[in-house]
Image (cartoon, rainbow, N blue to C red; front, top):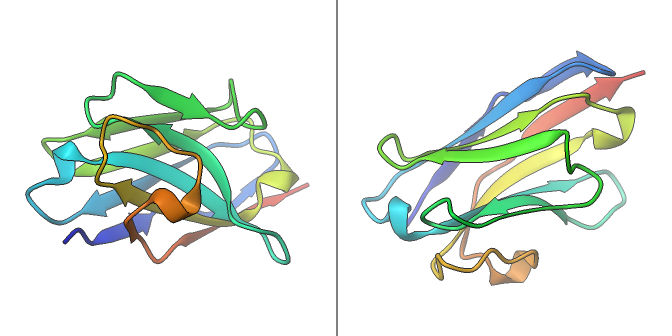
Length: 125
């Protein structure tokens, strides 16, 4: 069982930065692939970024490539999402998720086993 708690969301102006954190409980965190997803009002949940359990594989949505960076610290059971050059279209609730098949970075929400409660990110123009 893994419990995930996101933090770091907030209100920021366009062009600004935020860093989201996702703290995980459980001794097997280091074996999980981790992903960040987001969901805007009236839209489906979409993949943002993901990282394999070793950190050796990463994947990003085209819309965030070059602006967002995912990282993880297995010693701290934490995964991060550094978001730079934020745009109003980045406004959404951001969720972190954990996948037991840790070597594969999936972009499909249903392939993740555990989810956090989400943190709101609002980017004003």
